[in-house]
Length: 110
View 1 (cartoon, rainbow, N blue to C red):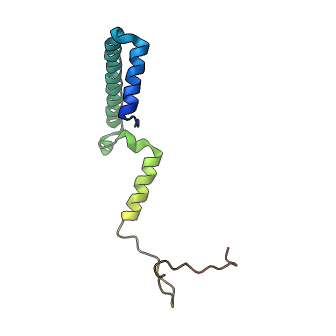
View 2 (view 1 turned 180 degrees about the vertical axis):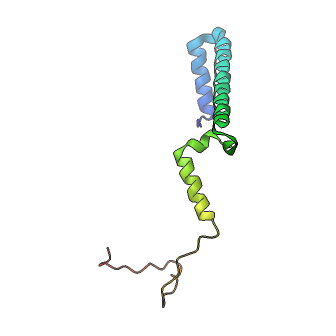
View 3 (view 1 turned 30 degrees about the horizontal axis):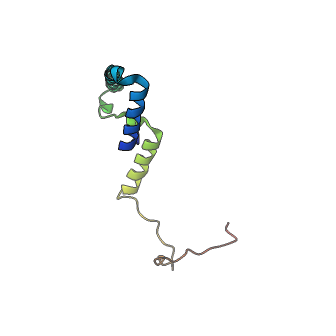
């Protein structure tokens, strides 16, 4: 979610010590941890209530499933993995393209 490396964490820690001071920093860190814990509980409760309201057929629902990009990617990958999707048959007299062979171009068709 956040791409924060060790150097960025160190810079943030130094800035926090300068801004809040070493005396108030532990209390601020405790408050931030409590806030994140409450936020995590709120998200978990919302997800549980959503599952309960939607019924048993959505028992395995994840919040990431509600992201349109993820849903489209999931359905495209499922369609590509289906074994029953057959390649289009070749017309009479046609042969499959060789590796690195360019398909024929018809300037009148475009």
